[in-house]
Image (cartoon, rainbow, N blue to C red):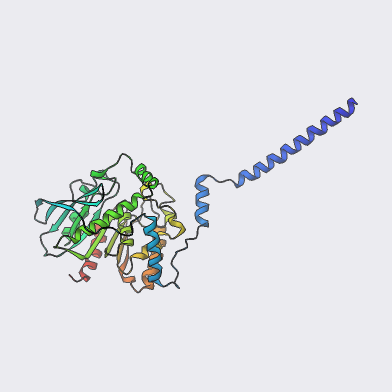
Length: 358
């Protein structure tokens, strides 16, 4: 009997050891299939096929209508709004190059947009207008008008008036006079409210165009929008959804999502929920056709791989080419990092403006 019990115990121990070893082997096998969270998202990205990516067989205008409607929805923009705008314009100063005014206009209830309007003195009205946007800088719009100095050639409004444009530099939500303790936190708060901070910024640009309509010496038919970094991102999406923008100058903010937003850490304010289910940035750029799009990139930009910029550009070009307007799309690459390259950009911007009839 004792011998039977001993043999039984040995058998049970052996069986238990065998089961444990099999379980461990299974666990090891499973662990090899587990991915880190970044690896998981990269895998999911590779499996995602945007359903509204442009195909050469698509009717371009019909495709634009579908994607623009979806982008408007993802940005959480209103379908309709009162185009009337309450504003206040006050003279500030006169220089040899321009006359400047401080501006305030209401974008929506409880949201007033401050800005500066600069009108060139060396050309005659009606003036073409460049809406100028800054990225993540404490100085905000004051950088655009040259009151806050930078080393990256970001005084867009000053550059614009020197090149014959009126310039409207507006303060974006979360920057400058409208700064928040945490841009990312406010972006997440917007999501909780069924909004996106990027969409709110785009809407401010759309309301800026409504403001331009109220100024008799500004030309509604010749409106551009430019910015660097997050300013370029907002300029890009604004031009995609609002056809009143005739020229978009997008600096260091255009790339495939895989080679920029999903590869390098960015502020939460620029992410759009579910966008890759529908289109990548290169396809979205096709919404600007047949209008003009100037893409400025830095060869060594640390948050946008140049290969991704080129890949996205080819996608955008496929739409412009399908519509017969490839001459209105430009890629300018500076030999540097995350900055604006005025010596490359302004000759192209001026050439585009000179093609327009006042």
